[in-house]
Image: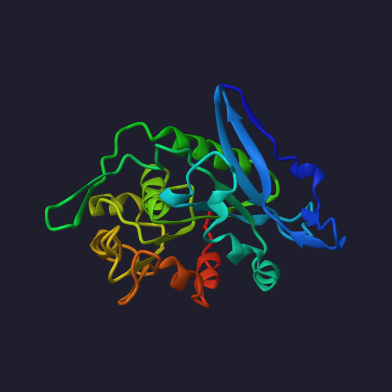
Length: 265
């Protein structure tokens, strides 16, 4: 199957958009489209400022939540993008950052949920052999990016929130050798799958009052994972609801922790 990637990395030393009014440059996520066969994936990509052609950079995949689905190639930047556009962050942790967008009426995973008469959400996480089409497309995109000389395959990370936090854990279960470390915010999954990604440290975040994805779904995965990976972490914000990503993104050591991991080979 022929894969076409509109990246043009070899022609780009630094991707800085110019403000048409001031004429000043500013960092921006560039719009891109990944095409595989008859399928198309919208995504945004951010390159390091003053990118050097002979240097290898970490690659970060960010999976958005259900509310950011669509086909505008814009909404997926609602949460998390500003973290990587911060000038201080860019200078300290230069990286290639990818925000794909999942279409409407489908998800990164096959997860199921139903509400009990008491109003609690009950989740199930089936893992059929085939991933959803958006997940398959994202995986192919990451494969293609990892082949590029500018990407350091020893530093490839995945993070996500809500639907993307669930997706982060499923991506690790499906492709455990691809990622160096991960961050899962207000997500969760089947704890029995933790053994498949034991080598990947994960920092879990959740709100104690989350009434969308109950905190137990990430806590159970953490409890399983910590027995085989001492570097994994769990942070619970007791008074936070589903938007625990606000507190997570404000953690001063968040990216230091993430980028601190490197594959041995």
